[in-house]
Amino acid sequence: MIEGLNPAWLLICGALLTPLLPRGIVRNGFMLALPVLGLIQLWGLPHGQYAQFELFNMTLITLRVDSLSFIFAVAFLIAAALAVVYAWHLDDDLQQVAGLFYPGAALGVVLAGDLMTLFIFWELAAISSVFLIWARRTERAYRAGLRYLLIQVGSGVLLLAGVIVHFRASGSITFEHLDLGSPGAPLIFLAFGIKAAFPLLHNWLQDAYPEATVTGTVVLSAFTTKMAIYALARGFAGVEILITIGVVMAMFPIFFAVIENDLRRVLAYSMNNQLGFMVVGIGIGTPLALDGAAAHAFADILFKALLFMSMGAVLLRTGTVKGSELGGLYKSMPLTAGLCMVGAASISAFPLFSAFATKSLILDAAAREGHWVAFLFLLFASAGVFHHAGIKIPYFAFFAHDSGIRCPEAPRNMLIAMGIAAVLCIGIGVFPEALYAILPYSVDFDPYTTTHVITQLQLLAWSALAFSVLVRSGIYPPELRSVNLDFDWAYRKLLPAVAVRVWDGLDRAWTCLTDTVERQVKAVIQFLSLHHGLHGQLAVTWPTGSMVLWAVLLLGACLVFYYV
Image (cartoon, rainbow, N blue to C red; front, side, top):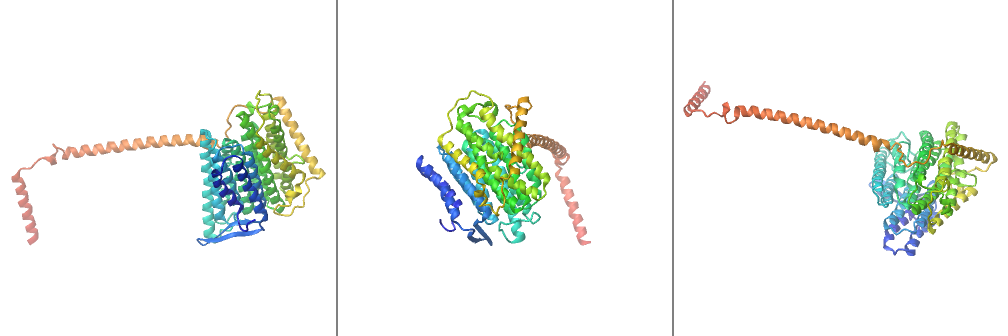
């Protein structure tokens, strides 16, 4: 352990050195060692602030370790290590560099002690992550990456503007709790909300993540949105508007995920759903609720990575993750199917799986504080996530019908990464006290009460029954070869159509204006030609005698005026 060394720099500097190493076991071992050493470094740092210095009358705190930043940093380093193992089969410098640089920048965000350092790492994460999308090297990925980059950089611009206004008003850039009504705070809140995928600001997630590479989607799923959850928990805990925002986030993805055919896009919608639970916890703002938000973020990083890993393995082996083209893969990929079901059970909050121990903290906090409307909506959202992520993902990929696809099992390194993630998901569910011990506040909560276990099992049983009835009756939306547009219809369809019409109108107006000006100029020229042209009145040459007479008369007039 090196005192004052930010673990983020281990990943960032190591990422830049990676292409210099020989491919194979040496490079893979080096890449895995970076997050492991980062975790050792982080664990050995006492809580406090490090690496402070002055710059332009601002105090930068580049490393702050406390109970809130610690749990997110641990989760990020574990996710980085899993992503490295999952990508061991790759021979792509671009993905390997971005796959370490991006987690390093995200780690720098959660360990930043001031808003300016936060902004720097915020933008580094945005710029480095887009290469995981472009690395797929398709036209769709290129366009999705451009849209993603535009939105992510836009979030950074809003953050910088808010920081400047806040600094001018308060004279401080320390990253602590912010009053939403204070100068600059609304801009910072909006910047965080974009990355947290608030409603109407969320489509960058469903647009970009499914277009990334097999391994890139796994990496992307762990960091960007969780950076925003950390930032909201740090800066805006207890802001009640977040309860409403979180409830909407937990609710609306259910309906889009049910009709979606691309299974990685289904998981992107389920990410919105799970983020909604965290945002509600932050909005409630009590110690139990904030513990729930942090714990659920930790668990979500693991089970969402496991689900994206399983779908990535399917995409690698079959070339598709369309539900309409899959089915029966349990025969060819039984291990992947089993591990996917662990992720499905975890996200669905089955007892003995991770979300059961973390989501219940948020629900209990909502009930204790009397937020019964939010509590009931979150219960409905819990049933919904079991439908679209707990059942739909493994059912349509592995069991729905026999698509006739026969393929090899996932590569060994992928199975190892999925296996470790599955063990951690089960470990958190069976031994939640281990996770509770590193939460920001002390937790006096037992998820395994008889009431809670029976209530959750009833919820899951009725949800499974509803799914079965809907499928058997033919009411459940079938998997169709289609593209479903969400609010992105506004900027994919509406705005381009409006822009074309506006441009055509402006073009016609400009043409009319130029034609009018041209006609007026021609009229003026014709008028001048009439009088000044070759045959105009003013162009006639006067006789010399007349000119002399006029000159004498003018000279005489001048003399008269002079002497008078």
